[in-house]
Image 1 (tube, rainbow, N blue to C red):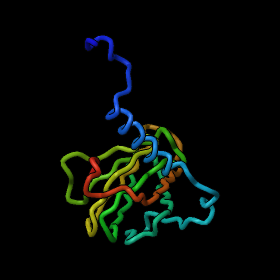
Image 2 (image 1 turned 180 degrees about the vertical axis):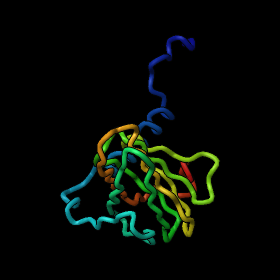
Image 3 (image 1 turned 120 degrees about the vertical axis):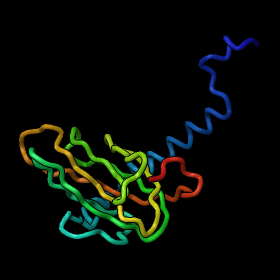
Length: 151
């Protein structure tokens, strides 16, 4: 069989990667009615050692960016999902700055290192009205060491 006949065919390695992606993101969407019981944090204080699932409300203004700060207790992979203000720009960085900050479009998973102060910056993306960007965090059981997207 030549290479042209293999186009579009799922190889075992492609199936494994596809299964991993589906599993990772299905964990992010599985909510089971827990949303109303989650603690909600604001930007008023540094968030330190949050629980395995929680929400952060970030007020977005039309004229400047808003920052929230968070520090985790252990190395872990977290699923982060925008619950509101979908067209806002939310990015994550280390307080001292990272080589490549990560922007959350709607949903993503990121491996955070313990005891590092992270900055979450909310940008209203030229939207004229003030509004709230709510982010849902859910700690995943994915292996931190082998996870590819670290900050």
